[in-house]
Image (cartoon, rainbow, N blue to C red):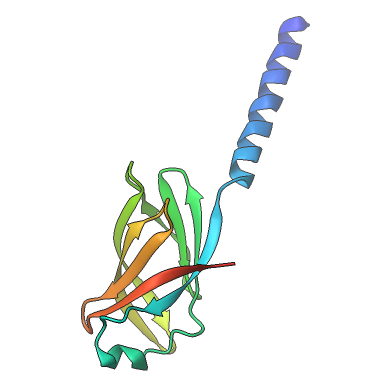
Amino acid sequence: MEAVLHKLFVAVTIGVVATSTAALAESWRAMPILASESPLLCRQADVSKLFFAFADAGNDLSVKAGEADPFLVPVSADGSIAKTIAIPVGRRTFTVDLTGNARGRDLQVYNRDYACLFKLQPVQ
C-alpha cells in the first residue's frame, strides 16, 4: 500500500510541476518598427496592424506573425536565433530573416529583396 501511495504521489507531483512549468513559459508581443537605415521605399510597407507573438518553449521560441500559423525557431545556448520566415503584410506575404537574441527580446526582421530592416519592439 505504501508503494502504491508513493507512486501516486510521484505521478501527481510530476503532473503539477509539468503544468506549472508550461504555465510559466514567458510570452510577449512585439511590433515592427522600421530602422532608420532602411531605404525610403520601405516606408511604404504598412505594418501598422502586424504583431508578432512569442513564447519561450525551452530550446525553441514559438513565433506567430500576424494571422499566420505559429511555428518554432531553435534557440541557441546564448539565446540567439536565425530563421528565414514568411510574414503576411496586407494582401502580400514577404520572406524575411528573423534574427537576434530571444532571451534578451532583441529581435529583428530583414527583407533581403528590399533591404528593409524592422526592429521588433516589445509591447505591453
